[in-house]
Length: 308
Image (cartoon, rainbow, N blue to C red):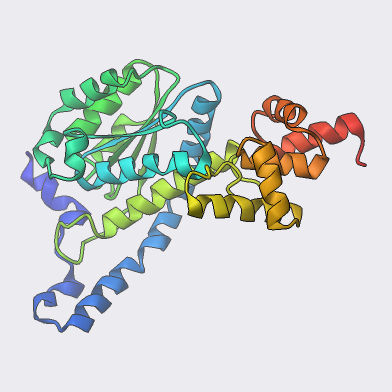
């Protein structure tokens, strides 16, 4: 490794505000960490133009039948897997639509496998194993902006025509030169020098939340600001589903339960049925025409049947 390059990474520089942290009392340590964390939202705000471009490209890929892959190593890889794994229960999408790939495989989620990040070929191989196609989107994640595993993955994705994006936490990241859209959230020196699971990890978590949430909203998985494709697979989620129906329709929980049962436990379909008095079959047909977007389905129904 070029150690001169490594020493220039903002995430590897000593933080002058925490140089004496080992001699601080507990409250002082926590205050110092909190003070550094408070800077992250403003840093991410600077990335909004690049994130806008990235989200729009991802949506275009998904609209043509593609998938979204996050790929990274260490903390970055774990955050990608976490974000991907939360999409199915929250938005009712298939587990293959958004996927997280981590260097070293699933075992690296629990047991550190940092050495796996040094092989560009492994990044390529992992995407081949997932059957990557030109319709897919690949977002490379690396706090340091230099991880060979991620660079190899992005280069392979680009070579077959897939969309490529990069999320790093340093300026002039090497990763940025291997992606069509580059996001550089420059989080600066960590509280503990080089511990990028802290501020850099927080920034990446925020960015991934923004990407997946914005994509799902644009896919019609949200109506107003409600998770209308939530899967009622346990007691908590079933209660949330009924609450969402009540919120949209102004109905009782009993009425919501009846609609949910009639819809086959499909929250969005139950809402459309309640708003239009349609039975499940016709309401489902309108949702299919609208590609799952509830607002558009309502517009189609009104256009055909009048505002009443």
